[in-house]
Length: 447
Image: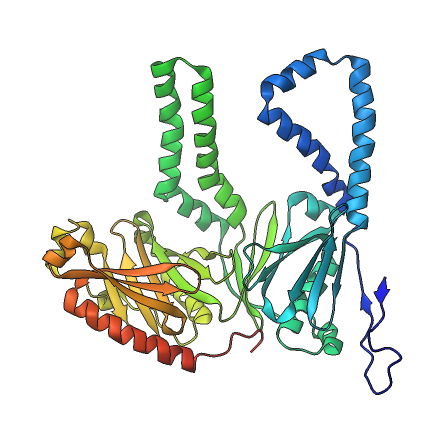
């Protein structure tokens, strides 16, 4: 399906190339046909008593008639929603048209695309299809194209990234997917050991094993035990088996369009960390990981849901990857972090020893946590605002907190600093942020 250029037949004006609209993969109707069934399930869950009464009245003939109506209706709905869904890449935007009754057209400016991820749930991998998810500046949630053929999804992803980088439409097809150089691969054995040594895993498991029996002896209500125990078991599974399955075969590669992250045992995900959009890097060090020298690296990316860079790795390897995310940044060693004054213990006993601060030419670095240490690194160019907060108890002991706000709607705090030091830090950090934004590299793909 093509749309003629607006300038066709007008002398002196260059005719725009025709826009070719494409449909999703033919397997898509099978996914969308479940919508009417989901509506029935939602009604049954919302009003289980009424649903049970209706089921008891069903006869075999009525059930067969209902299936004979429901199955073709679901198949027709899936086909029509697929038939009326189109997408096209124009000179300046990605256009997605959807809707069977109520039409919806999404116009995504190519220069505002900051990440394009390819995900493959288990059944999609079997069918040879993939889902394309787009992170767009200013959008609250990701737009997606589900599903495309696996090769088509990768080719479209490469084209969109090339167009977002500023390549001309006629050359974007020829750029192809940029080659990637592997920086890190997490062995499954290390991942499994790391999850065993994580306190949250054991805490969720203990709660799932202890709380249901206690509730049974207290209430003797099976429904109370199930309503509490099932979510606890789900949380324990998500913090252990779920994380292992999701973070299995974690690979980080470097390419001209950013850092590429591939992971997943059942559902395979291919993500991209957008260059220049990383606001904060956190190096997390749980207590039981310290003997092995392991850390976890997390990210705050403006307008993106990407949050993990490295699930577990030796500290030296993780810091080398951080240096690729934040060029020119060196992670401050632990002895370079200054603690709050000793009188901070009167505000926060014992735990004040976990706080630390270091300000380098490149980053604002703040550490917190005594058992689970977390070092947050904020490049000066990414600081949106700086605030000094001082409560009445802190004023009594001449202490203050300095809050640094980033473009990802997150805050990094230097806790319990000396009041005079905090005031000077407020003034100096505002100046560093101003000069950092002036000297920062442009947030462009493949720059």
